[in-house]
Amino acid sequence: MIPVILLLAFLQTNQADQRVPLREGCSADDPQLAVLTAADRVEVRGAIAGGDGTCYHVQVARGGETISGYVLGATLPAVAEFAVARDQAAARGLEAIAAQAALPAPAKNAAVAAQPPAPQFFENFSGRDLKGKLVSLDSLRGRLIVVQFWSPRGRSKQQLISLLPFYNQYRGRVSFLGVGMGVRSNALAAELDDVTLPFPQIADPGIARRYDVDPRAGKTFVLDSSHRVLASGSAADAMRAVREFLQ
Image (tube, rainbow, N blue to C red; front, side, top):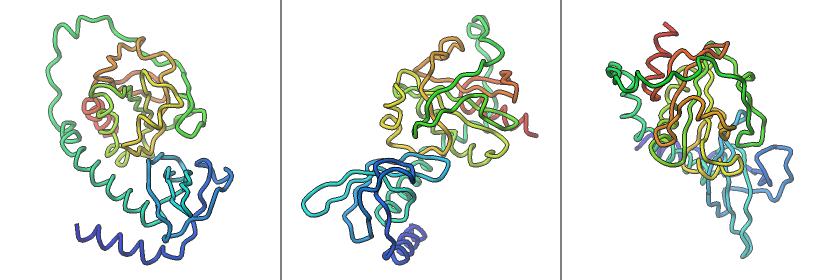
């Protein structure tokens, strides 16, 4: 706790004079609504991860009015506090889930083994990410590709969140993609408002059923660069497979 307090104090001291643009969207090219400083009363409503850094949806009370918009980065003290608090909460929730990946794989159930196998290769598919950028399977680079199907309902969203420590460990060698089931592209950001993920998220373009994905449980696939399925199952199962393939 003491290091976090010191970090926030450092940020507040060194950012007091910073001026941060408030924009209509997450791009630096979006129209500017106002300029914010540490003196403004800023309330953070959510966060969206992106390639150029995290974008935060904020509301600002100024002159009896409320201005809503987006800022890039955690320069403002209120945003920095929000980011630290979220990181701490996510770390606590992920410790137990990440530990599952170190356990031996459970024995396969005979009934599961008797089910018709899913296709052994993924065809290319695409969708718009949280910032509206088109992302396709073909555009992902890396020795391995991890595709996580998740839904706002059930426990599958937690499977998506549990990939975060593995992304931090393997990024550069492994590409990650989240595919939201039962949610429209324009609602993805709202469904992920309680978590910030640094890898792209798109809405399911209609392929989950083909790969026998249960929306309640979700499913994680490990693909090679040619999109051949190397492993599938829970996030913990998939990351055990990733470790083996990268040895």
